[in-house]
Amino acid sequence: MKKDLRRVVIAGNWKMNKTRSESTELLKQLSDISANNDVIVVTCVPFTNLETALAVTKGTAIKVGAQNVHFEKNGAFTGEISADMLKELGVEYVVIGHSERRQYFGETDETVNLRTKAALDAGLIPLMCVGELLEEREACITEEVLARQIKLDMAGFTADQVKKTVIAYEPVWAIGTGKTATAEQAGEACGFIRSVIAKLHGNDVANAVTIQYGGSMNAKNATELLAQADVDGGLIGGASLIADDFKAIINAAVSG
Ligand code: PGA
Image (cartoon, rainbow, N blue to C red; front, side, top):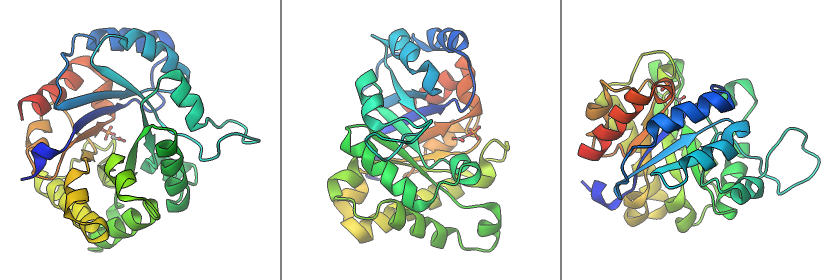
């Protein structure tokens, strides 16, 4: 309904895939994507490939993102990368709170909140991930889980910070499993997230927030998922590693 008010963001999450030379090859295959003011295309590459990705995509319509960021400005945090470090490189986007980080690396709603704030403070656009586990969906508590995550992950945010954050709804059971949420399930969950934001910050803010769907989105199902009124783009893992598939998803967004 209010879809035309929002940015549509199609983001590839490469995860721990592609060496620097492989990244260059894939990004070159994507470089003919034509600029479109309504659809923003982002590739979130491993830290070691950021500088290369920025150089290869220069002058193209592709924006570059990282896959994590630490919440402190600097200090004794071995192995971590700060928001200022990303910003200085020219990175514009960063994935935060992906379920793999929550599951394997101890991310909590509290650290997701801190990381998202740090990203916003540095002028990065966070792609902040939320989503329920299979057992939570089966126990019919999807809405409770999503409401809790949104409230905790965005606790203390100003309306402006909420508007700048891109939310990725990623049901954990659909990630990398080939099991996509139905378009209806995706639309419902994204609509529910928007209603939580509306309660906290009002309709104008809620209608301005981009909410992506993620979880086995591919060239075949993208059109139907992106046609949902509350789905404003996608966070794509596996299919973003194949140039033709990622381009087909972008085309689905552009013509949607
Ligand atoms: P998938 O991953 O598209 O491979 O399911 C999505 C994601 O983890 O962001």
